[in-house]
Image 1 (spheres, rainbow, N blue to C red):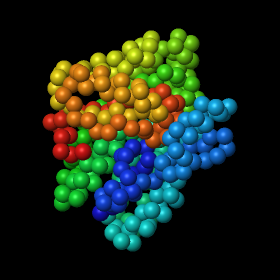
Image 2: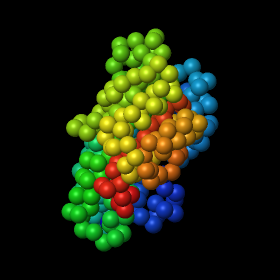
Image 3: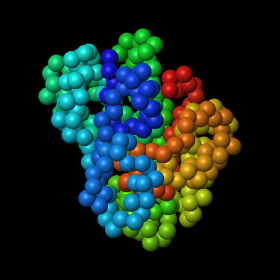
Image 4: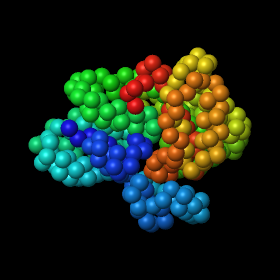
Length: 289
């Protein structure tokens, strides 16, 4: 079995690891100043955000086409028709539906599609868990049960210092975003699990208080000091990411996954300041990711 995903799941594996797990990543795209980049392939993270900071235009992101998926499905099906296609939430991107359409073009491919109902690190956990489960010899029904367990157990939330990119991209209410910008409010934003869309969890006056707000929200899900698996990602704000990680580490018994930048296409909707955390009870996801 091969596993297909998109760059919005932020799995963070190198080429050798992807090959080992039979994972294939279809990139999303971001266009800035008339030039289109393939996420994770043809521009470095720092260069992208430097260009974003100096650009007079807002970035435009786009999902892979049905044809992009069909081309990959056809190539993989020639070797093994069984494919598991795991994608970032359909509530925030059309990528999942493009994958569905792509599979219809390639009837010889036996594709099972999974909407993770989330994005970035927590979505990547589902991809990695599927790959590990398959390597361990689990049957597809057990693999799907594992993905549901991780989805139900995990939470994602983030904050950022400026809202203009979220407002421009239509990812939050323009009016609420405008008011927050005028008041210099730092929002706490989560991803709800019914439709996989953004929800506002709170707000703070300063970035440091917003980070503390994220820690406080983690406490509403897990008792202070309890064992959790967690991963902090940032757009291009390593200092903010390290600060959030340290604050969470003081409050919980953490098993940490790597701190690193997130997908450029996701960061294009937030700007470089964004930091976020994915977390779940170790009892639920330990050994799976």
